[in-house]
Every structure is written in structure tokens, then in C-alpha cells.
Length: 115
Image (cartoon, rainbow, N blue to C red; front, side, top):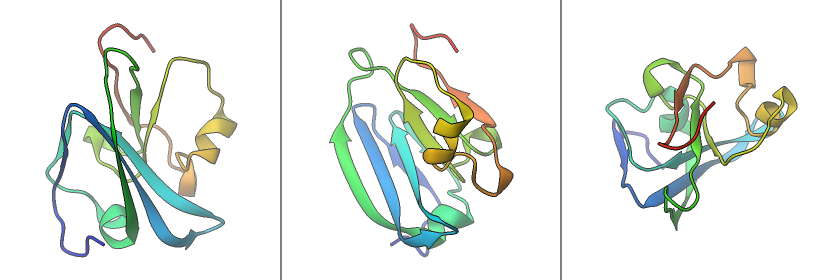
């Protein structure tokens, strides 16, 4: 889908989910971004593997989500968004946030939520 994409931006009122066309290891890789989000370099994984894209409306004030990133400086090697709640490492694994030993390296926390 991307092949030559180097940057990526999601508007403030939108959530975007991307999914790979084929399995990576034992699962499909996916990324979730809830705006506002902007990155100047998408990284090799998303650039090479993303094949499907879903866009939905997002209201951060009504349904805040914490953005979890598996690389430093909010790079999207692995990305997911979660609402308020308690989460365990098995949840991270099921979301693809613990692939190849990667862990959460960056967070974006909306105003009003605490981590």
C-alpha cells in the first residue's frame, strides 16, 4: 500500500487502523492511530507491510485513548490506542505491541487521563 510513503498524518477527529495483508510471524501486524498524529518517517514495517486501511470518526473529549508506540519518538513500528482501563502484558501481545521483543517506548496521553 505504501511502498514509497515517508510521512503520515492523522487529523484530530479521526482514528486510522492499518493491517498487513499477510501474517507476520504468527499474527497479522496492525497499527492504530488516533489524531492528532503526525510523523515525518513511518519506518520500514508500516511502509512495507500495510495493506488495508480503516478510517473512523474520533472524539478525544468523549472517548479518550492513550496512544502506545513501540519505538522512541512516537515512531510507528508498533502502534495501538486504548481507552481507560487496566491492561496486562498478554493484552499488549494480543495487540501486536510485543512483537520481536519490542515494548512500549512512547506514549501520548490525552488531557484528563493518567497513566
